Length: 415
Image 1 (cartoon, rainbow, N blue to C red):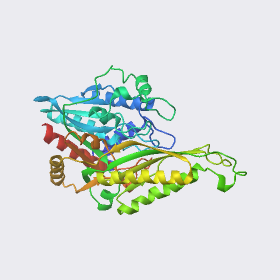
Image 2: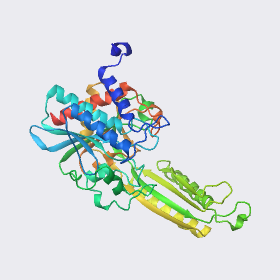
Image 3: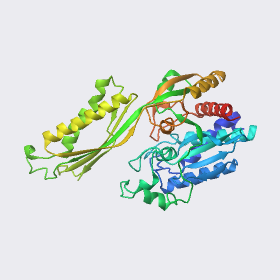
Image 4: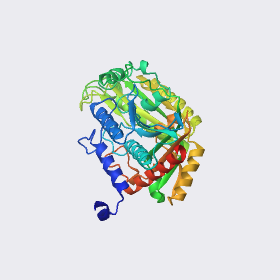
């Protein structure tokens, strides 16, 4: 009756309901979702997703970093796995679609295929990856990075959050990281497929249904620490000050203006700033800020890192202050698999879905998997291009088109 009144299909309603259901785990005071790695909210979401998978008769298990899997065993090829999913963590005060939609879509698609066609010939696994965002600890793609052997779980003691809790401590608190579960590294994954909201305006502006990603930009992230001297705001002459915030602002301005050298294809963001002591009548003695740099060409990223280091050195010499820079993330641009892209284009055409190829300016777990295995990243439109915000939104009808494409893609690959 509801479907008749709203005009929405049962599948559309199911997707919307389950997106809303998952958003309750980490619901915050800003009407968004805050679900950081190894927090209680994060664990509750993983446990709830495991129960959801079990209800659809998927075999479930965790690995030792907390990646959650739901498995449909293949009748002909159980040792070769088609993996589909996304990440369960969010940024602080994020939206309910980023990451979550890819997991929900994978669960719905696997459940639908099992119910309609039985077990696949090739094994399908749905994954709820433990982490991608880097919102709690200064590390990104912890879930996909461990699966692909980029990270070593035993070397996590020195990685700490803002409360000086180490990544290893956080893992152990929830029972992960101590060998209780299987090792995360895998060598049996033949394909990885991720369905995601675009987090940009290209599809919406073009009036299209589907984005088929050809490549993902590379990223570098840095933390800059400027050390000056705190002193009285009313008694310290301007020429004698060692104002860490003033020097930081000079550096930040020059960093942002770097993008003009590259016709604005270079994206530079200063997203996090900590000022100490952060008191109105005290000269800032120390400042720490982040730098996020993105471009689709690795050569440009390397060139920009060199320029950033030169700027830091120049301003440090001029200001007579200590400036330290730590590059803690460096991800190369990654191309997606042409064969999977072509299948996705064909399915889209068959279903009368309008699509376009595009480059993703946002990083995704597909960026990690794409270095090791054939990978496909698919987008549905984002309203206003807004993401990492409680205002993040994609209509149920647009989400449904993405899920239908995913179902058909998995059917062609696995059945």
